[in-house]
Image (cartoon, rainbow, N blue to C red; front, side, top):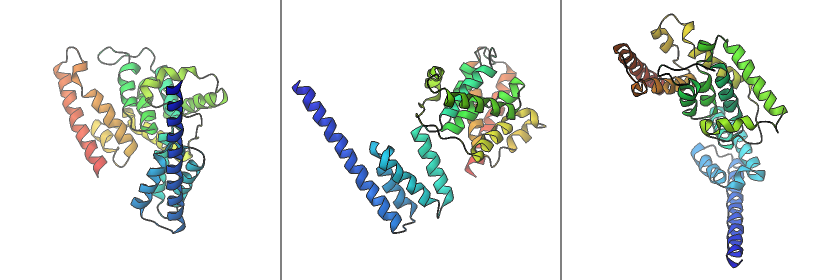
Length: 276
């Protein structure tokens, strides 16, 4: 019992320390905003100190952080958007979309196999989705071949995706299916779901449109049209990375080797686009 009491005391002290750290960081951040400081590096250092504490992820800490994002938007809208996107990703407020995308991809590609004879969702799509950095890249990654390989239009795919999310929101106690995709998605959804903006839905739809090879005249045109579309480029890089692994094919032919070489050239071209 004495050990238990010591452990409980340690936990209480740790929580109290975190709360003090969060309060201090919150106070400094509020003071910086009152003084109209616009040096993003300075502001980020203070904000990160708040975010690094559990108290900074809830209650007054979260309110202060959201106030900081709003303040950023008054002089640097792009930085505000990037900060908000990163925060929502950390908190799992929109990862629900990636779960819905994984479920939809599994349904749409049912019984399909890849070149190596492996289940298409469990092999290729799971890999591309899993390697996505954030919820957007994961969402598009899971669904990047849906329009091309299943006969559904991108708009139909978006409608189906929204339907899964609507059902999830209306039946919050009946979503055991998410556990099937937890290891693949890699991040558990928050109890809160922040609905996507029209701009975010448009960005996903645009990326899925770009991924559909059937809508271009040739491979060169297909790759070139990714230029300037960062989300689509990042997903395509993950797609090509999987396809370049020739070890997944038991007996590769000369045609397979030639395709791998083409994929490598496309991969480096897309990397250059991303850097431009």
